[in-house]
Image (cartoon, rainbow, N blue to C red; front, side, top):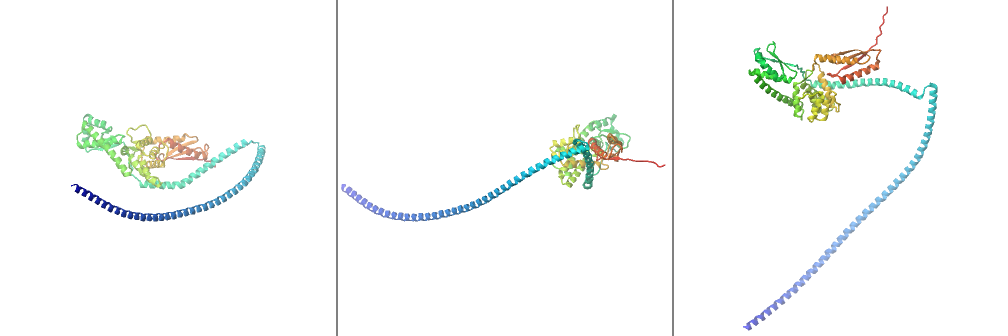
Length: 507
């Protein structure tokens, strides 16, 4: 057994030694191959490094050459600029020398002028003393006389100049203004509507009158109380008169009567019910009229309350002229005239439609309708130029835009058309008397005549009391005072007449 173990150990040792010998041989061979590869890699790396170095060296040399070229170029430019600066410095120095020479010359001339001025003042004083000695007047007295003479001459020349300018302006501008106005009127001609304070309600038979009156007049009293309209039942066949200054109330009464007569049931409770129903219908109709009017005119963005007030204009009148038709006419006239003058026609149309909005408020405060309309427009966020045009169309406020005089002129045109307006006889007579009395209040006026339905005022002055220049001043003053203090449709022409007659008889 021990023998086998020994043999095994010996065999192991021999095998291990053989394996070590083979491994060592192979290791030496691999080491040689690796050394050869490393040497080859080393040579290749050296070659690449040399090539990279050569490349970087050439690039560096190129950059150095470029920088040297730029430096040379900049040096050349600097040399050129230095030469230019030297030239400019030379020119400046030359100009400074010239200025010094001119300054010396100027000072010499100033000294000479000062001496001449002193000589002239001395000669002027001597001449003045001689004139005062010869004339016997001091300088201040002579100056006052000269100023007075020049004042009179200047006043005469100024009046003549004013007349010439006015005549020239009339010749050049009157024709063009008439053309614009006539074209505007022709393009926007509307019908004339005159309203009364009464409405005639027609019925089929006189039997219906008794039913409307009711027992002991209960029905008619209930109807008058509900509508606020005076109902006149007289001997006129098949007609009942509704009397009220408010057209809205008359319209409510008319429609209510129509429904009651058609239905046949006429008693106080039914009357109150029908009147309330018709009143609501009228309110809805007013809003619808306002909307339709704004759509027809192409006006957008109005506040709903302003639309309602526009519709309410249908049931208002001014001097007998329907207010809605008047406002529509003014709006169209404003748009046409603004287009002719190169202004914004939409703004002008908007201001023309709203210019009389102050005549139809719900509360009706004690304010001029133009100012009230301006405040309403401001309240409902209208633009400042439109608000100003509304407030200034009767000169209650100062005009601040070109739309304002257009609205004023178009309002006057609409009201001045023949048949457009109608005045109460008493108011008409009072206006004529006021015109004549206003002119008579001036000194030198002998007689006054209001003619052409108050559109012209003729004033006769004493020839011995006023001269021609004072006559012209009187016409201007009268026109200004009438414009500021009186209310009238259209315009008033003032004619001042001064006449001298010499009469003798041969016997």
